[in-house]
Image (cartoon, rainbow, N blue to C red; front, side, top):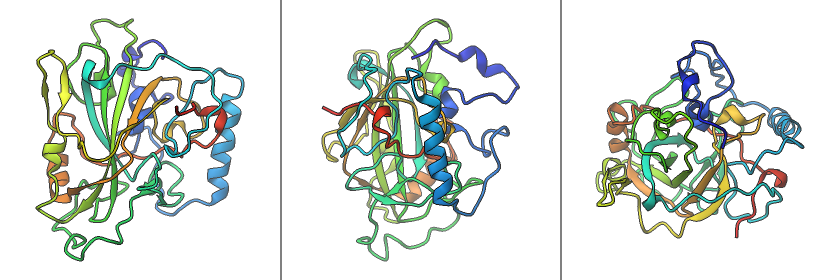
Length: 302
């Protein structure tokens, strides 16, 4: 990972995506420098051109493996391997946020949402909601986590990122919270514990408040305490930050990923309540980066 960029955060200029925006936090809802939203899906040609631009801008430049990916496909040709981050239990939780639709792909969340607007919205992957009952799919009263780009509805899929760092920090807003501003030259390791959820209108389903709980462990490290333990063994791989800001350029940041392969149901009302107020100042689902398919930009999954 390159040196910490915290000092750049104060600039008023619209520049290339920072670490925070690159990980799905760049959109017109939160960033006036982002492109305006389009509400019609772009053509396959646009996505193909984005993939071609990514391949061209990274070829021979020494970029490490990228994210997101299909975690069921283990192939990868990228040889720029970096040191795997420690287990999350030996790191500090620094941020929790979620993306509308899954950025990663797996058997349980493999339904393509479509090309979207070309800027990360209305794209990604969905879990199968066809088995949900009419009660679980009943409309909500009022809009849930509403933004310029989308509103959450029963049957929707979200991918939650529980971000960990080796830096000595407290959990907070944005991924800048994963760096210690008192040590500007520190280069912390990062790990993202990842869980995909299916939203249901069911008060008996899991509460997002509980799923996002965190506290200090006896070790003194901040830990997320509500991540489900029954959604399969997490697939571990080396990759990068995500977010649509890197659809056409490589992310230089190194991230160890732990992606759980199975989906859990969550009460959509509790997600809406969380969006109304949480320690991370999150109020909507972020956009997704195109799934990385270029084997030269993927690490091999052991």
